[in-house]
Image (cartoon, rainbow, N blue to C red; front, side):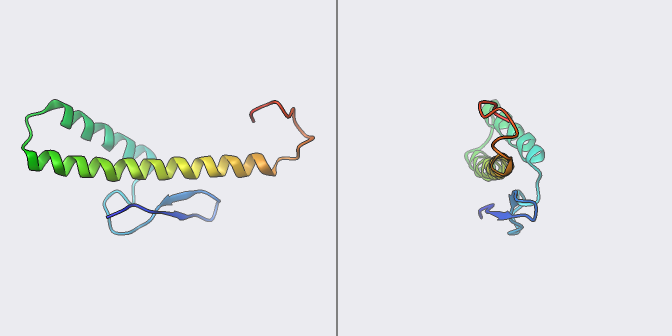
Length: 94
Protein backbone atom coordinates (compact mmCIF):
# COMPACT_ATOMS: atom_id res chain seq x y z
CA UNK A 1 0.00 0.00 0.00
CA UNK A 2 1.29 3.45 -0.82
CA UNK A 3 0.46 6.76 0.77
CA UNK A 4 0.19 8.89 -2.36
CA UNK A 5 -0.37 12.60 -2.05
CA UNK A 6 -3.52 14.38 -3.15
CA UNK A 7 -3.67 18.11 -3.67
CA UNK A 8 -5.66 20.05 -1.11
CA UNK A 9 -7.67 23.16 -1.70
CA UNK A 10 -4.99 25.38 -0.17
CA UNK A 11 -2.19 24.43 -2.54
CA UNK A 12 -0.60 21.88 -0.24
CA UNK A 13 -0.73 18.14 -0.31
CA UNK A 14 -1.75 15.57 2.20
CA UNK A 15 -1.52 11.81 2.12
CA UNK A 16 -4.33 10.18 0.18
CA UNK A 17 -6.96 8.29 2.08
CA UNK A 18 -6.16 4.98 0.40
CA UNK A 19 -7.10 2.88 3.40
CA UNK A 20 -3.55 2.61 4.74
CA UNK A 21 -3.05 3.43 8.40
CA UNK A 22 -0.47 6.10 7.59
CA UNK A 23 -2.83 7.85 5.16
CA UNK A 24 -4.76 9.85 7.77
CA UNK A 25 -1.76 10.93 9.84
CA UNK A 26 -0.51 14.47 10.21
CA UNK A 27 3.15 15.10 9.56
CA UNK A 28 3.85 15.24 13.29
CA UNK A 29 2.02 11.98 13.99
CA UNK A 30 3.84 10.18 11.18
CA UNK A 31 7.20 11.57 12.31
CA UNK A 32 6.63 10.52 15.90
CA UNK A 33 5.52 7.04 14.89
CA UNK A 34 8.52 6.72 12.58
CA UNK A 35 10.80 7.68 15.47
CA UNK A 36 9.22 4.92 17.56
CA UNK A 37 9.63 2.36 14.76
CA UNK A 38 13.33 3.22 14.45
CA UNK A 39 13.77 3.00 18.23
CA UNK A 40 12.19 -0.45 18.31
CA UNK A 41 14.25 -1.69 15.35
CA UNK A 42 17.47 -0.38 16.88
CA UNK A 43 16.57 -1.93 20.23
CA UNK A 44 16.68 -5.42 18.76
CA UNK A 45 15.12 -8.48 20.31
CA UNK A 46 12.55 -8.81 17.56
CA UNK A 47 11.85 -11.77 15.35
CA UNK A 48 12.65 -11.49 11.68
CA UNK A 49 8.95 -11.20 10.88
CA UNK A 50 8.45 -8.45 13.46
CA UNK A 51 11.47 -6.59 12.10
CA UNK A 52 10.19 -6.83 8.53
CA UNK A 53 6.72 -5.63 9.57
CA UNK A 54 8.24 -2.67 11.40
CA UNK A 55 10.53 -1.87 8.46
CA UNK A 56 7.57 -1.83 6.08
CA UNK A 57 5.61 0.38 8.47
CA UNK A 58 8.60 2.70 8.70
CA UNK A 59 8.81 2.94 4.91
CA UNK A 60 5.13 3.95 4.73
CA UNK A 61 5.58 6.50 7.51
CA UNK A 62 8.68 7.96 5.84
CA UNK A 63 6.75 8.29 2.57
CA UNK A 64 3.93 10.07 4.42
CA UNK A 65 6.41 12.49 5.99
CA UNK A 66 8.04 13.14 2.62
CA UNK A 67 4.67 13.89 1.03
CA UNK A 68 3.83 16.40 3.73
CA UNK A 69 7.24 18.05 3.30
CA UNK A 70 6.85 18.17 -0.49
CA UNK A 71 3.48 19.83 -0.01
CA UNK A 72 4.99 22.38 2.36
CA UNK A 73 7.78 23.12 -0.13
CA UNK A 74 5.23 23.60 -2.91
CA UNK A 75 3.15 25.95 -0.77
CA UNK A 76 6.22 28.01 0.14
CA UNK A 77 7.32 28.18 -3.48
CA UNK A 78 3.84 29.30 -4.55
CA UNK A 79 3.73 31.95 -1.84
CA UNK A 80 7.16 33.24 -2.78
CA UNK A 81 6.29 33.27 -6.49
CA UNK A 82 3.13 35.26 -5.86
CA UNK A 83 4.99 38.05 -4.07
CA UNK A 84 5.54 41.19 -6.09
CA UNK A 85 9.25 41.22 -7.02
CA UNK A 86 9.65 44.92 -6.20
CA UNK A 87 7.93 44.73 -2.80
CA UNK A 88 10.85 43.17 -0.97
CA UNK A 89 14.60 42.84 -1.10
CA UNK A 90 15.26 40.34 -3.93
CA UNK A 91 18.16 38.90 -1.95
CA UNK A 92 15.95 38.05 1.04
CA UNK A 93 14.92 34.38 1.29
CA UNK A 94 11.36 35.26 2.40
